[in-house]
Length: 151
Image 1 (cartoon, helix red, strand yellow):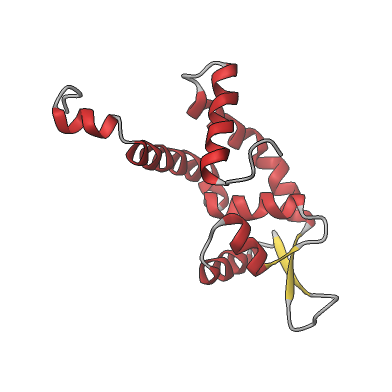
Image 2: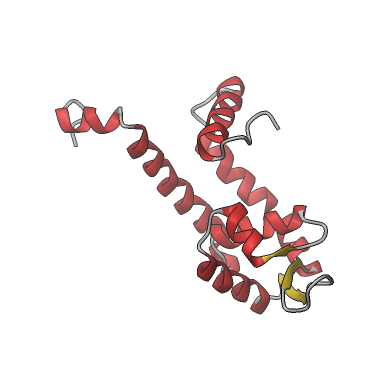
Protein backbone atom coordinates (compact mmCIF):
# COMPACT_ATOMS: atom_id res chain seq x y z
CA UNK A 1 0.00 0.00 0.00
CA UNK A 2 1.53 3.28 -1.12
CA UNK A 3 0.85 6.14 1.31
CA UNK A 4 1.38 8.68 -1.51
CA UNK A 5 -1.58 7.50 -3.59
CA UNK A 6 -4.39 10.10 -3.64
CA UNK A 7 -6.99 7.81 -2.05
CA UNK A 8 -4.57 6.97 0.78
CA UNK A 9 -3.66 10.63 1.37
CA UNK A 10 -7.36 11.41 1.58
CA UNK A 11 -7.89 8.72 4.22
CA UNK A 12 -4.87 9.89 6.22
CA UNK A 13 -6.48 13.31 6.61
CA UNK A 14 -9.98 12.03 7.42
CA UNK A 15 -10.52 12.27 11.21
CA UNK A 16 -13.41 9.79 11.14
CA UNK A 17 -11.31 7.16 9.38
CA UNK A 18 -8.31 7.73 11.67
CA UNK A 19 -10.47 7.45 14.79
CA UNK A 20 -12.05 4.30 13.37
CA UNK A 21 -8.58 2.79 12.77
CA UNK A 22 -7.46 3.78 16.25
CA UNK A 23 -10.60 2.19 17.72
CA UNK A 24 -9.92 -1.03 15.84
CA UNK A 25 -6.31 -1.16 16.99
CA UNK A 26 -7.21 -0.29 20.56
CA UNK A 27 -9.96 -2.92 20.65
CA UNK A 28 -7.65 -5.60 19.24
CA UNK A 29 -4.92 -4.87 21.79
CA UNK A 30 -7.27 -4.69 24.77
CA UNK A 31 -9.19 -7.79 23.69
CA UNK A 32 -5.92 -9.72 23.33
CA UNK A 33 -4.88 -8.66 26.84
CA UNK A 34 -8.24 -9.71 28.32
CA UNK A 35 -8.68 -12.86 26.22
CA UNK A 36 -7.09 -15.20 28.76
CA UNK A 37 -9.82 -14.17 31.20
CA UNK A 38 -12.58 -14.83 28.67
CA UNK A 39 -13.56 -11.17 28.53
CA UNK A 40 -13.43 -8.35 26.04
CA UNK A 41 -12.93 -4.60 26.25
CA UNK A 42 -16.67 -4.01 26.57
CA UNK A 43 -16.82 -6.20 29.69
CA UNK A 44 -13.81 -4.40 31.14
CA UNK A 45 -15.44 -1.00 30.56
CA UNK A 46 -18.52 -2.13 32.51
CA UNK A 47 -16.34 -3.41 35.35
CA UNK A 48 -14.34 -0.17 35.46
CA UNK A 49 -17.54 1.87 35.64
CA UNK A 50 -18.93 -0.36 38.39
CA UNK A 51 -15.62 -0.04 40.23
CA UNK A 52 -16.27 3.71 40.51
CA UNK A 53 -20.00 3.41 41.29
CA UNK A 54 -20.10 2.75 45.03
CA UNK A 55 -23.84 2.17 45.01
CA UNK A 56 -23.81 0.09 41.83
CA UNK A 57 -25.65 1.15 38.69
CA UNK A 58 -28.90 0.37 36.91
CA UNK A 59 -28.39 -1.41 33.58
CA UNK A 60 -29.93 1.51 31.70
CA UNK A 61 -27.46 3.86 33.43
CA UNK A 62 -24.61 1.62 32.29
CA UNK A 63 -25.99 1.65 28.74
CA UNK A 64 -26.32 5.42 28.70
CA UNK A 65 -22.99 6.23 30.35
CA UNK A 66 -20.96 3.74 28.30
CA UNK A 67 -22.82 4.23 25.04
CA UNK A 68 -23.88 0.61 24.61
CA UNK A 69 -27.21 -0.60 23.26
CA UNK A 70 -29.48 -1.67 26.16
CA UNK A 71 -29.87 -5.21 24.76
CA UNK A 72 -26.08 -5.53 24.50
CA UNK A 73 -25.78 -4.37 28.12
CA UNK A 74 -28.07 -7.18 29.28
CA UNK A 75 -25.78 -9.72 27.61
CA UNK A 76 -22.63 -8.08 29.00
CA UNK A 77 -23.99 -8.08 32.56
CA UNK A 78 -25.14 -11.69 32.09
CA UNK A 79 -21.57 -12.62 31.09
CA UNK A 80 -20.09 -10.79 34.07
CA UNK A 81 -22.60 -12.37 36.44
CA UNK A 82 -21.82 -15.86 35.11
CA UNK A 83 -18.11 -15.15 35.64
CA UNK A 84 -18.84 -14.06 39.24
CA UNK A 85 -17.50 -10.55 38.59
CA UNK A 86 -20.79 -8.65 38.97
CA UNK A 87 -24.22 -9.29 40.42
CA UNK A 88 -27.70 -7.89 40.07
CA UNK A 89 -29.49 -6.87 43.26
CA UNK A 90 -32.99 -5.48 43.76
CA UNK A 91 -33.04 -1.69 43.79
CA UNK A 92 -33.79 -0.40 47.30
CA UNK A 93 -36.06 2.30 45.87
CA UNK A 94 -37.89 0.17 43.30
CA UNK A 95 -37.82 -3.61 43.55
CA UNK A 96 -38.77 -3.92 39.86
CA UNK A 97 -35.33 -2.54 38.97
CA UNK A 98 -32.03 -4.33 39.41
CA UNK A 99 -28.83 -2.58 40.39
CA UNK A 100 -25.59 -4.07 39.08
CA UNK A 101 -22.77 -4.28 41.62
CA UNK A 102 -19.15 -5.32 41.34
CA UNK A 103 -18.39 -8.43 43.39
CA UNK A 104 -15.23 -8.96 45.41
CA UNK A 105 -14.05 -11.18 42.53
CA UNK A 106 -14.75 -8.31 40.14
CA UNK A 107 -12.64 -5.95 42.24
CA UNK A 108 -9.84 -8.50 42.34
CA UNK A 109 -10.09 -8.93 38.55
CA UNK A 110 -9.72 -5.18 38.01
CA UNK A 111 -6.58 -5.13 40.17
CA UNK A 112 -5.25 -8.25 38.44
CA UNK A 113 -5.68 -6.79 34.95
CA UNK A 114 -4.56 -3.26 35.81
CA UNK A 115 -0.98 -3.88 34.67
CA UNK A 116 -1.99 -5.54 31.40
CA UNK A 117 -4.46 -2.82 30.45
CA UNK A 118 -1.93 -0.14 31.44
CA UNK A 119 0.61 -1.76 29.14
CA UNK A 120 -1.90 -1.69 26.28
CA UNK A 121 -2.51 2.02 26.84
CA UNK A 122 1.24 2.64 26.95
CA UNK A 123 1.72 0.73 23.69
CA UNK A 124 -1.04 2.68 21.97
CA UNK A 125 0.39 6.01 23.11
CA UNK A 126 4.09 5.13 22.75
CA UNK A 127 4.65 7.47 19.77
CA UNK A 128 3.54 10.44 21.91
CA UNK A 129 5.36 12.36 24.61
CA UNK A 130 3.69 13.11 27.97
CA UNK A 131 2.38 16.53 26.91
CA UNK A 132 1.03 15.09 23.65
CA UNK A 133 -0.70 12.28 25.57
CA UNK A 134 -2.39 14.79 27.86
CA UNK A 135 -3.46 16.89 24.87
CA UNK A 136 -4.78 13.85 23.00
CA UNK A 137 -6.79 12.73 26.03
CA UNK A 138 -8.29 16.20 26.44
CA UNK A 139 -9.20 16.40 22.75
CA UNK A 140 -10.71 12.90 22.69
CA UNK A 141 -12.81 13.71 25.76
CA UNK A 142 -14.08 16.86 24.08
CA UNK A 143 -15.04 14.94 20.95
CA UNK A 144 -16.38 11.73 22.52
CA UNK A 145 -18.14 13.19 25.54
CA UNK A 146 -19.23 16.81 25.15
CA UNK A 147 -19.06 18.46 28.56
CA UNK A 148 -16.66 15.86 30.02
CA UNK A 149 -13.39 17.70 29.33
CA UNK A 150 -12.28 19.88 32.20
CA UNK A 151 -14.40 18.08 34.79
